[in-house]
Image 1 (cartoon, one colour):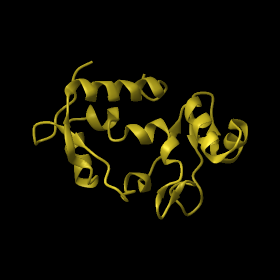
Image 2 (image 1 turned 135 degrees about the vertical axis):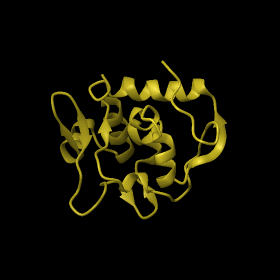
Image 3 (image 1 turned 180 degrees about the vertical axis):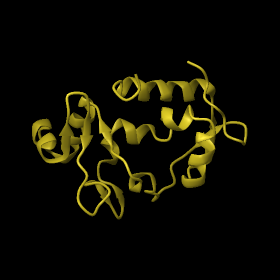
Length: 144
């Protein structure tokens, strides 16, 4: 797998900024894996079946969190993500998504919006490739 474009500063650096929920408030959906459903259900003390009944929209090819009316996510509170220790793969791997890393200028554009880009230790190309590959493995219908 080729190494995605580096940031203008010569490398990839990312560390979530405590209290920031900007990525959670963007338009779009949170896609899930079957394992995400089980982890989130355990976190909330629900069966996977009950969690899915309440919070998941399933199609033949994808699972995604339902979007509540007038809110970004059922699990986003003023203090952050209520699922944080068991948050979905898509959320955990942000911003190492193919649509950010493989798009020319994508990492730089995301840095305009995400205060965590450019913070933290430099990441090696191998680490970036592993995170990108993990995203593609988790969501093959989106990245085939």
